[in-house]
Length: 239
Image 1: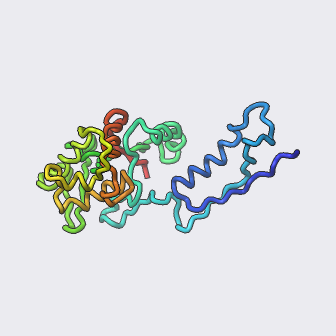
Image 2: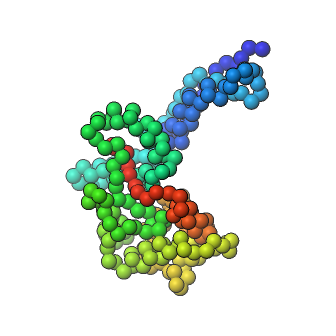
Image 3: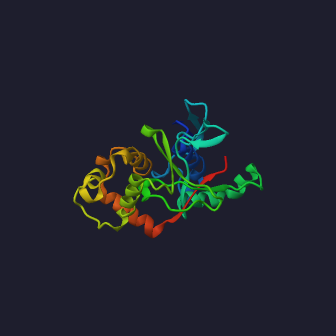
């Protein structure tokens, strides 16, 4: 029986998941063939001939997009996925593997990974220091049209950071409580003017802005895992 003809695959959208899928389809098929495997084996997919990516926008990357019009002076603001979060992760392993190729594109005098200061409150609150290059984080309160430095002494901000930093010390429990439940308790209540900032942080880490839908136990487990297994530090790829 002749082998099946190559597949033509269409992928809708050109975000990170779509680009990864295209790369996997184009590179992994030959690696899956083992010596002596019959081409008609039931567990072997037909080879992929072409992959076409269809994207409605004028750029690739999906949520990975930057804008330099928001802040005067050409300062770049990341509108979606901002950073490479933490070191020693799968993503930083990919960057290390492909680093030499990327370095040849941007030039040897440019740093491939630029260390930046950014802290999602869903990860427990900010550190109290800038980066080695003197950069520091700011937080935007939309309703007040106000920026807060990472080391602000704003009482509500400090209260929120204290409560979030203590999540890692909570015991794991299957009580069914949500983050909203926890943050409404008398001893761990979050100041109302910080709720929007808090929801933005968890939309980044937990993919949800409704804190009533985020499991307290899940986030406690996440905080403990991060504490034990990940390396601190945030960076972004050179533009």
